[in-house]
Image (cartoon, rainbow, N blue to C red; front, side, top):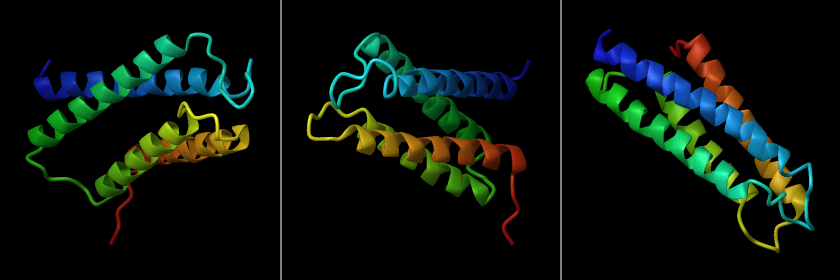
Length: 130
């Protein structure tokens, strides 16, 4: 197995893990909510898994970019912007701040879900912008 394929497999496995942790962490905004804060049960484990999976996605993505000599399709830039939207909206949704309303947290979650779905669609469809 060549290095490119192995890196791609690790990248996609990390994306799948990130998606599973995303769903589990999203459930904390609906089940067992305490005031305006997400359910604290398993918070440290979910945060650690989410950070680990997104870090692996970022690092393997950078490695794949170097392996391709930075030659990318135009949709790649949209994917990067959506990844930044995903990260920033997740930070907003799960920020430890008592002034954030639960509705604002859930809105951040919806934005991040839309960004995650859009990234997956971009990767599957690979649109040609001409």
